[in-house]
Image (cartoon, rainbow, N blue to C red; front, side, top):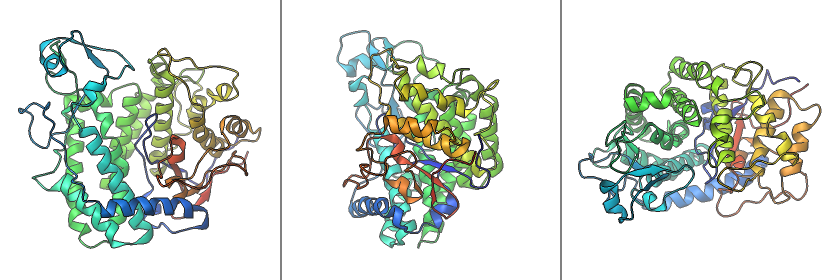
Length: 449
């Protein structure tokens, strides 16, 4: 099989659904050069409707200070709690937090713990609003969008009264009285909650020529620099970087995206190369499975989540001249091995059984199969056949992905839903992904073989 050599595929995973990813890498050149094209009008229309909503909202963008957050934690600190932990007692949760031991139950979300802090939602809301407004400004040059995005950036990252401190010292705090490695602080796992920032910061570069943007973006870069310094020097950050599973992938993506935003391509490349030499060879087995993810309670979700992040990271790598699509993940293994692992599942020759009994949705595999065809070729149409086996007639690949690319490869020419709903976030994560080539919109077709 051949591979693309002349058309760099830069991948962007734009939005998190409840079953997949959130973070993304966006090609800065393409973002600044966005133009309306016939094939992307629906997605751009949906983006504009959402941007109009954000531009007219009077939402306060700051971290919410819930009553459960200890007063000893400084104002402006991001706080979240580890939702897979459950108390070993029957006390009310506010008392159980400090009166009994807690135990981690993988995949079993504690909804009461989720209510202890609104900060995860606060951060996602900022990412969504700034990204949407920035992309819309890049296309329509409507100053309302730029003003809205810049106001949010100033409030959340610059204004000392409302800004988030540049650390995640208290991300995913482990509740309970049991002995904890990081004491009363959070855990390395909390850093996965900040991964939406990478895409958001890069998207904000479309604002560069907007009135007042220079000062604001300079302030944002100062915040990002401080956050990166904390990420690389704190015990929590260093341990997350060394994680072998999807957390290590997310850490590599964040650092590469942050350095790209700061204009430090050397450090961005180093973050990726360190991952390729460290965690990456531990992630993909000879058969293409991801044991560190598959062994989880909801193994299919975490395996697919990591696959998406690997493809996403490959987009950052490609922008830096690193071919992660070819990079070895152990003897005879590459990213293609991980994607091909799912082919028999698409054709229902195999069935994936989650330990926790969770159901498995195959449609999100459309995107990895499309990207494999684009990078490795599809002369035997194995990817096209797999796509056709799992894509339902109502499959909706429109969305922000269509700002950049035609993701129709393998999909039926008739019966595919092309019109977006008023909510431009579809339920399938692969509809959130785009491929860019500079400022030109490209069709996603298989590489020559």
